Image (cartoon, rainbow, N blue to C red; front, side, top):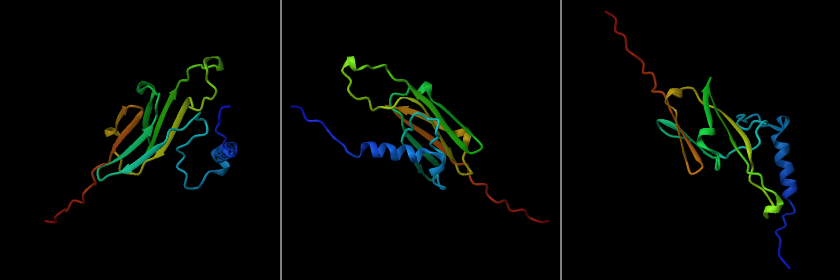
Length: 145
């Protein structure tokens, strides 16, 4: 006799996740970083430092060439796709939990971000974006003669 893991709340948790993805249940504070048209959404951490913002996203299995990053009107968009290998139960798979397909995340960036200086790096399935802040415009004293 083999033991199997049973989680009685897994279906409820899945339903709750799907309900919260619906537009009518979005929080007012939501930053629209999860778009309903996405098949999956990578986990993202955002950190503010003195001279830049760091955005770190977990995107294992996504080829860096298949990632599209652009910024327009202070909205940073990250799109990509993780392709699934076709697996059938004949190959011994009883469960497939890793999500595949298109992901699409959007982030509203604060004013004062230098869009021309954004650098992206992918290492072992972790995408790191360095988003520099613009130098503050210093007031200039004008002397009267």
